[in-house]
Image 1 (cartoon, rainbow, N blue to C red):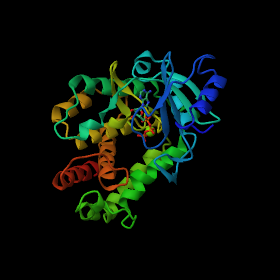
Image 2: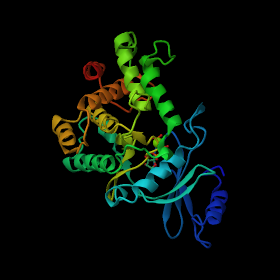
Image 3: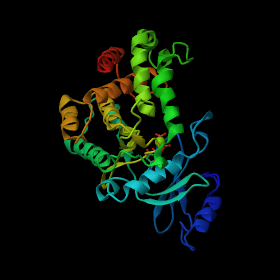
Image 4: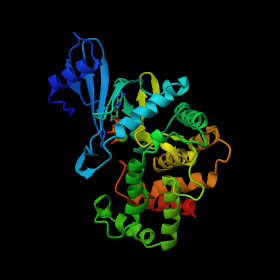
Length: 332
Ligand SMILES: Nc1ncnc2c1ncn2[C@@H]1O[C@H](COP(=O)(O)OP(=O)(O)OP(=O)(O)O)[C@@H](O)[C@H]1O
Ligand SMILES: [Mg+2]
């Protein structure tokens, strides 16, 4: 079954056969619910309700020549299954209505017309105190509930981590990766060069990559992570702030999720009060390593500024220079 907005009857038949639509319930409209790169996502409208259908394919939807792990939607679905037992977490995510492992398809509750939080990257936009707390409380709850010495093997998510490893650890630091940063912003290529040539920095980055993939002498117990905790995974809905898209989830260091979150708030030039709220609201578990959190913040800033997975930032080259400097210090 290949999800396709141009084939509503094929989808309708599929949803009937699976029992996700009632017998007499037909599709009146299919629409794109919002922007996404990795997967194919549709809003299904019937006379009774709306649903979200999301399919992952063996490639990146927006760039079909780039391969990606096909089963990522199933792993995302398992995350919803696992976390829906916890009311606080379930209340901040869409309800899972179905998983089809064979077709890498998810059926999710529709959170309604909403916008994600990538508007924060625009100048002078600020995360409210209430949202900063809600987003941080979600992480505290997730990390506390699923902290374990014996991670559930259903969430190894090795292929997605390998994909991310390329984008976080390798690609941004390759001098001849074929990506001209000056096409993003003139002067960015020159700004990035010293980092790409810094062998000490690259060693530290590689060591962090080993922690990310769990390739450390102590192995990797840790906790269940969202894995992609940035403004594109946060939705502003009529029913409050919600979290979506845990396709990069895995058992790993809590410092990763919080580090990524803080990195994005820094790139979105949020005032110190917002960062302070996040860092003081977060309830860290025993053994939480603030140094490691800072390192993950540093690498996330670097890879977003000089890597391929660019953000819709509106920062001057000078501000990017300052952020890269700061990221460099966080990584040392
Ligand atoms: N349950 C939902 N309810 C309402 N809107 C949704 C829901 N799930 C996704 N959307 C909308 O669809 C967009 C794309 O969804 P999602 O981020 O899950 O896709 P993706 O392909 O994994 O994206 P990315 O490439 O950023 O990883 C979201 O930004 C949001 O606007
Ligand atoms: Mg995604």
